[in-house]
Image (cartoon, rainbow, N blue to C red):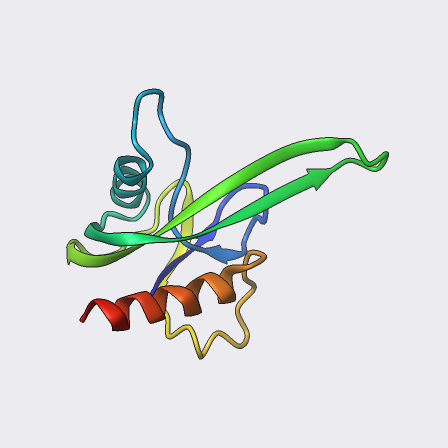
Length: 123
């Protein structure tokens, strides 16, 4: 699985799946592919939807500061070598069962294991 460390909050310096914001009028799948290429220089072909993760950040008084819903897709690499960039610090290919020692975004191990099952079923 391709992981990239985040260069900005939330979860600064944590490894996550490359991704970003959806532009107006853009489908979730198109946004995922565009962000993958913009952030780490990799192109892929989407196999299917994987899962979603919600990230809710509250201030010291309990008021919601940010609420992100992150849609995860399973894809197969088609071209490009992973590169670091302004939004992605370190970039690495990782086995989802060997993530010890990496700081990960919340929920990432569950998302990666589900993605692995989807890939195995697609073969």
